[in-house]
Image (cartoon, rainbow, N blue to C red; front, side, top):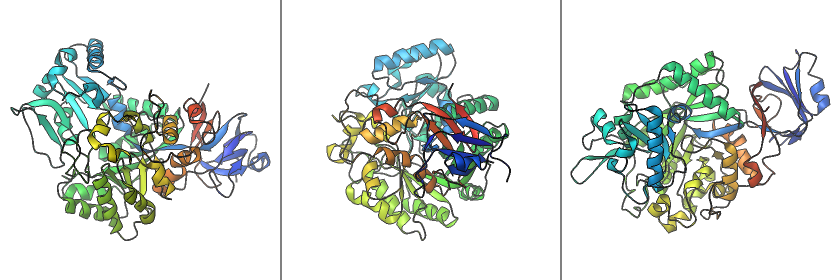
Length: 532
């Protein structure tokens, strides 16, 4: 064998390999680990052509995989104004005025991460923001990307004059006289305006995608599970790879919509075996319900507004049949299910599929009582959780999420620790652009049960926290397990995806992990980030 391409020596390695949990050196050849052990082990596979990095003080772990993300959408949406942590309506108006001044009159004013609490208990109406949005159209996405807010000019351009019928439970909110308020709930309704926003050039989009990838590499991310794929996503991944810009691995989940006809479903099936060097398309994503904040999550009992009684798939039998079709074709299935009824229904469906154990997962699981939590391990279903989403929930339960759900169900909020304690696979992620993709924030929230940037530092809900090691495993080994890959640990023969930190993220305090330096990120043996 020819010599290794890259070697790290004088480092502390947490391998997550139970057969050899720690090491002090490793070597890489052709994107694969060829030695993991001590300096002598590595010396045997190196020569003068090997790039050797000495990392005194470096703590090396497997690369971070964000288990739920929308990379391409995020890269585009994040070009607009950020409303993250914009807490009042007056502050919202100030951001809108500043953005209008920046882009000029007549241009589309775009924004993201709008927090429902910023409405201060009001129902949205475009008259609340028309003056601040200035002369031109506006479309701002909510923090969870399940709602968008348009001004009067955007509604006019899009020809939205009243309610419309959609196949997936989406709706245009209208006032008592049937006129649109500007609030658009769920994607089909959002697209009534989104689709008339001028499309950026392919070159611009490719540049934005590459920029987002580099930013993620800089915080230790070496892979993502992309949750909204289509043919255009595959074309973008192919283009990024051809240009040498795909600096992370992508497990692509093709989106399955309730309105998909036979041709659309057959086209998704045909994509299953499409792959690149760093991406694959053998997974699909379903969405059974919406979100708690707007009453579109599917609940066992109505929320405090009387909502939450319907799924996003109007024909649940059709949902089950379509799930089974993709199971039988060998796909791995991820299903968005936030409400307790939705989570139960997905578990019930998966339980009828032969050979399903270990193949399928449920995304978010924001409300689930103990009896439902206990089913994940028993039935071999993974839970894909985003602890950083706790940043919008308060222990005092006056936030929109808690007010909708009610105190008795808030106790079971986002039970990642309870699911993990049961022995089930728990994959961690961000849902970016819904929340920041920095995994250090997620590691903190998983252990403290609140976000690092909140004033009220009391744990949310009754679920036990994850430990530091469990949280790290959720971003590494568990993420690899759920997509059927052989990564997630550092051992000979595994992909050379790794991160060098300033300390061990599994052992340092959550308060320290938030600012933990990322010294080096390697994907497939390529150094994609190195701190100055």
